[in-house]
Image 1: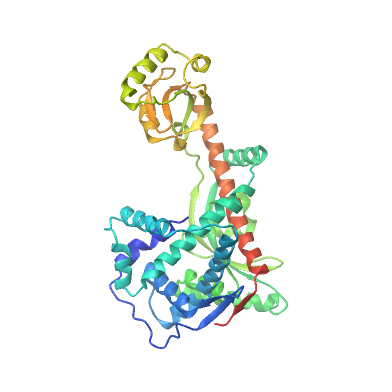
Image 2: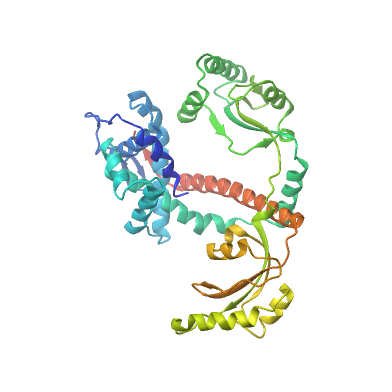
Length: 420
């Protein structure tokens, strides 16, 4: 999450026009107070500059006005998270921020210091990026401390999702974006439908679904919902499914009216569901571990001894039994394990290792390891990999839900005075 800012690197490099600071802006003006702590016009201005440059948006009054409300809410959320971090003694130091900046530069083939300088040349204050990255780091640490410990995915959830995944192979699935307008006391069903019809006409005329959707989201007249996950056809209501089947990518549906709302959907993409072959991403593994010698000058001697002790082992069961007599007694049969969680030096050794053959001793920071692949069962490996994939998907879904709920709770409990 902390590397979301990487997304703006490529866009700002292509930007040639320098953004000038409006002379009329009152940078010292307080525009919001969050639990007695101010957010100033300077804070808003810096983030606006960063957002406009990073997204390659036009730097005009309309764009800045459209973005201001959304960005102010982001700054309020960040202020609340900073206050939570202070309460929990979570500290982000300058070195962490600088390391993050350097990693972004390395990933984008930039020289050290070039990122902030390039942004600065385009009118972005030098503190803007650091403040944004600090907020991302705080968010990540709060996620680790508060959100993730609350996530519990049980086997029944995984198995049910896995069965659905298998059953849905070959079915059509969609990615969609939605403009949602709810009926309420201030806007009747008939009035809301009229507004939705006008919006739909504008979208068809100007081909500007995302612009209108973002504007509605910002001004609070409705919601813009963009689902990055594929939705299987059987999970859609009949009218929406029929509409999506009739249109092409980037086209929009007729109005979809329910008892409480009216929606306009855009079809972002469509495909036939297919299950990827993940069997090679799993290894059925056992290992014996040995302590590093106290005198590292004797490492070669230790390696030679370990080779002699393990070379004749021919099964994982035998390897496990051997841990009772050799090594540091920490060896075990791991069973099926994702390769993604293994160190690179392990993966290199496993690449050409035959089943039921002990590996060469592998030197690691915490010891010396001998590995063995117990067997390769494509079917079982595929089932394990898919269940791990499903579990990760469920965890990510829970993270999004809990994060949104957490931010909502922080906002509800806070004393917030908006003066913009």
